Image (tube, rainbow, N blue to C red; front, side, top):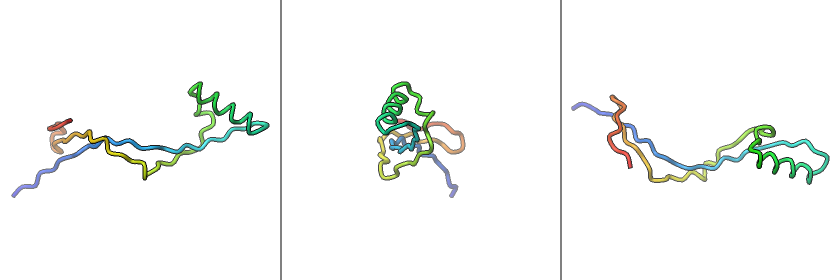
Length: 77
């Protein structure tokens, strides 16, 4: 009997923890710089690295099922 393959793509949410470094005279100044960079959407300037917080992964219950041979979506909710 033939074996047929399918792909199930699940949409999930997850938190990432980013680590940033800010050079400043005081912690108060550093906090102000970090908050200003965040407000300006310029956190790339202080970004060092990030970790995915595995224990925060949540399934949204949204998913697609695809035919592996054709790539056609056969179900989507």
